[in-house]
Length: 121
Image (tube, rainbow, N blue to C red):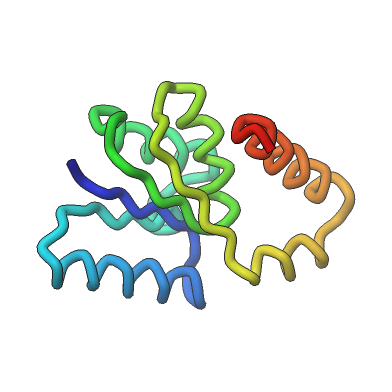
């Protein structure tokens, strides 16, 4: 079984944490894939489709999803039958949430509402 680290950050804390986690797995000999969705060419929909194609055969593996794009991507993965998902919310997501408009806040709130209901909280 492999661990898949999916994040969406061009630079900064989420990217640094993801790369550090990947290095730790490498040092321990733990098989894993590190995917930065921002490194995939195309618009958001194209990045999602390409990300799904990378992991389609890995439904039973563990997915660590970091940053909002990756967490949102996790909703789609759940619908497609992926069930070992770990969502990591970094503090900068809170800062991002506080700085955005009503529509984006509503979408983010809805995503976390769905996750909360699925986890029985």
